[in-house]
Length: 109
Image (cartoon, rainbow, N blue to C red; front, side, top):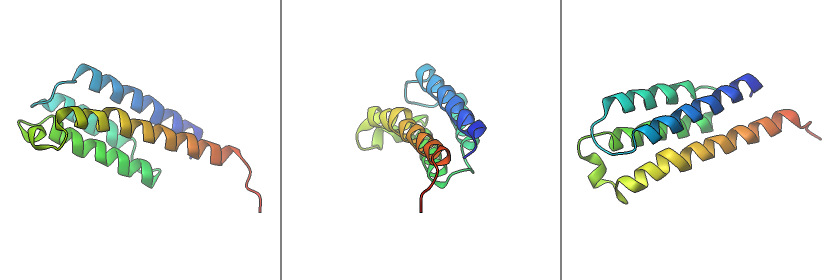
């Protein structure tokens, strides 16, 4: 993973954090959903794990920013926000750090 891509991921995650802070109530919010989708697209394509987690964030945001789907989610809207707004972004950050460490440490045979 190139260092410029890792910086892009970190910047994108910061923007995603900001969206979730501004739009922290469940319910119909097409603007927030569009922002989340766009930011998650920006994180895809360079690492399968990050792509998978970004896709999961988008799927959860579709539920969270819907009319009533969040009411049917086990754990309620709080668990949705916890997973999409904290857990998944943190595992993406961890993966970026892991990839950086792999690229900066020589491999020994």
